[in-house]
Image 1 (tube, rainbow, N blue to C red):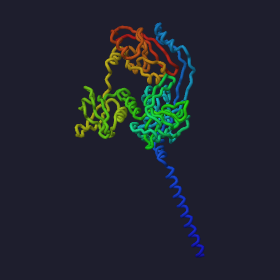
Image 2 (image 1 turned 90 degrees about the vertical axis):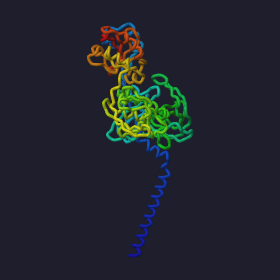
Image 3 (image 1 turned 180 degrees about the horizontal axis):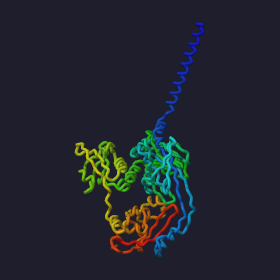
Image 4 (image 1 turned 120 degrees about the vertical axis):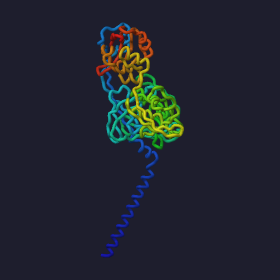
Length: 463
């Protein structure tokens, strides 16, 4: 009996030892398989967004609800409203990448152009409806926003200054709708210039990163990362006739464009009143290069040469941090700024104000009751008026004003005043200056809604 017990004990020990050796071997094998590429993908993949959009394309038709039209105005619209289009809904797929914990997503502008609805799915399967913050068709970049009560995973921005030919790169995205796909390769070349044709004409990309990591339809807008899991580019284009040639917009160029796309004065109409510049040493914050007379910053005694290091509890390392933080604020919000002035730390509280209207826009408000701005290509696309190359956008209408009395609404575009074609605010300004109280002017407008694209003609009395 004793011999049997000893035998069983030895057998158990042998089994345990064998199991430990197998587990150690598996761990060692797993460790050798968990390469730097795997680690980089683990860092970045939770922040990759699968983007689907809906676009409504409707029949174009004339809607003369404002009464009779002039021959000049009719001729203008005959060029664009002669052909009808069948109403349909497209659901194109693309990719994007979350760049901070607040849920801001960068993607290609062509992925979301003219979208009536934008949906985002993350790698954990969670779905969100995204809103468009702003876009720039010339750089082919757009910013979206999704919301959650918890912080989002995001990809840290790297730099494209020190990119090395031959270094390992990874492209992430959703090619052909296949979610969470990964391709690897090397950085093949820098500073490429390529022109591609799309439905709105030619888009010229310059300074592109070239890679042999496969970039397929649906990868557009997704991140290109380095071996450290840092964002070094936004996947933008492929060469259909070639294998293994893809292109990405370098991250430094992306960052420059984002500063414009996050412009809080343009987007949120709030006024702080300083110009800032970045320093080589980002730990010093950003430097105030000018202060507007009479602005909130001027009233709070912010001075040229000050370094802004924090806003409230948020550390500020670059202009993008600065723009993003203030974009979330509203008129009358109080912000606490940590300032370094000549080596001395101090705190300054600034109360944001409504951004003042430029003289031209002030004149449009006083005489017609219109809030106006230049129509940009990206705004035209968002309004489903991508064919319209120029005009003046009506961003809002003052109550009980001449414009309100004749039925003008936000989202309409001024294209004619009198017999004059209006391409921008400067041309409108010239006419506003000669308008006198009691004058009646004919105006031509274009707008789009769920029923299609329309044109109208109104007579407005100057006040």
